Amino acid sequence: MSGRDEVEPLPGFIAWPIRVLAVVFVVPVRLAWELFTIVTRFIGRYVLRPVYEYVLYPVLYYVLYVPLRWIVLNVLWRPLVWLVKYVVAPLFGLLWDGLVWFVRALGPFWRLLGRALLEAARAIGWAMRLLYRYLLRPLGLALAWVMVALYRYLLRPLGYAIAFVWRWVVVPVARAVGWAWNHSVVLLWRYLVVIPISWVWRTMVVPPARWLRAAVLHPIAETTRRVLATLGLR
Image (cartoon, rainbow, N blue to C red; front, side):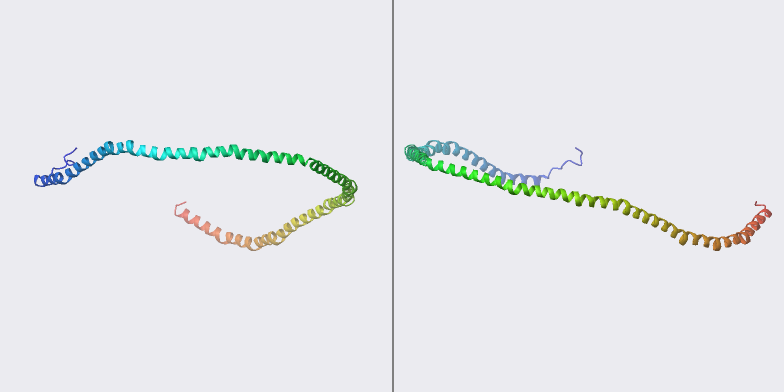
C-alpha cells in the first residue's frame, strides 16, 4: 500500500473521546444482548423443555389423544362396522335376492317380450325386403338407366360437339385473330412510326447536316489546320 492510501490516525484529543463513548454505549448493549441470549437458552433448556416433556405432552396425550382415540374406536368405528356387517349387508342381500326372485318370477313376461321383439324384428326385415325389392331396387335401376341414357344421348354428344367446335372453330378463329392482331400492330408501327420518322430524317435532318458539314465545319477545320501549320504548331 502506498503512502497516499494509508489512513492517517486521528489525533489523540478526538480518538480518546470516541473510545470512551463506544465503551459507554456499545459495551453495555453488547453485554445486555449476551445476557439475554444466555437467559433465553437457560429458560428454553431448563424450564420450557421440561414443562413440555413432563407437563404439556402427558396432559395432551392422556387427556386429549387417548380419550379421543377411544371414542373414535369404540363409539364410532366399531358400531359402524357392526351396522355394516349385521344390518346393511343383510339388507342388500335381501334386496338382491328379492330382485333375483322378481326377475325369475317375470320369466314368462321376458319370454313373451323376447318373442314380441323377435316377431317385430322379422316384420321389420320383411318390410325392408319388400321396400328394397319393389321400391328401392326399381328406383335405383331407373335412376341408373336415366343416368346412362343422359350420358349416352346428351352429355357425350354435347362433349363431342364442344370439342369439335373448340378444335375447328374457336382455335382457328383465335389463331386468325392473333395473326391479324400481330400483323396489324406491325403494319401500324411501320406506316405510322417508322416510315414517317425515316422520311423526316431523310428530308429535314440529313440535307441540313450535309450542308453544315460542307459549308461551315469543313472550311473552319481547313482554316484552323492552315493557321496551325503556319505557326509551326502542326
